[in-house]
Length: 378
Image (cartoon, rainbow, N blue to C red):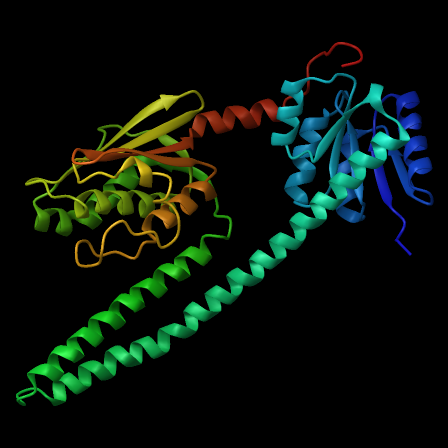
């Protein structure tokens, strides 16, 4: 027998709240319906009790439905949340989905059939999302454990290959020495690839976000890459005054270092050059990392961020095929975006969009401010 459903409905209008609770009880026989008029108490109730679905009115005096939905979604990634509104507005629907709402329904269309459809669909989708997330976590944990366990035998291969080479030092065994050198280089490449796999799985954990001074980030990257730049005779140019963004400093250092190294590595110019520029776009900053390298064909621009995609043989350009994948994961983890434009033979530009520090604070201030006066019935 299917377990009885438990619902929460939230609406400051007594009559509409009763109607919704009555329809839910009739549609799902035996269901328990908790009907609330105050939105502010809902997060605590949902934190302490388990519910199959929450149905929120959009227009409420203490806290509107979208703000409440964001709070509930932050606390529970798989709670089905349905927005109930008096108007069927596409802009509102889009904003609701961005706020974490599973689905929405207009009050004029509430019926036993429509409620059954939207509630069942939301519960099923949330259940599937939970299963997928659990399976992904299991796979990531397995990949991490596997990569971690690979490290010891790889170290042994490298160590014993070197020991054999040392033992044969001075012995007429040129072919054996060459084979040992190939073995050592292959093991070293495998060791580096395993390190990258470990980074890839660790990036699935949400990083701590804070205000990041890109001046400090670029200074760290420049100092770290100074030997490589000197060796290649390369130029690295950064903005004199970089902006503050919302992100993670450690991840930003890794991302920019990766993009700059790529710009120098995949480059046949007499003087490899990588330049970082910053420009404002609304509440975001966009970093443009441009180089004068070999470029990327248009057909491959959509592929380069996928795992293990290599556009060149190892003999042409060494690499793991995971660098840009890691960069994209790191940017997405910071709630940003990264994309690429390129002209073969003339260079590549990577664009990184991140929220500005002040823009994030302004957005938070608006969300915390009490809602203004709205039209009746909205």
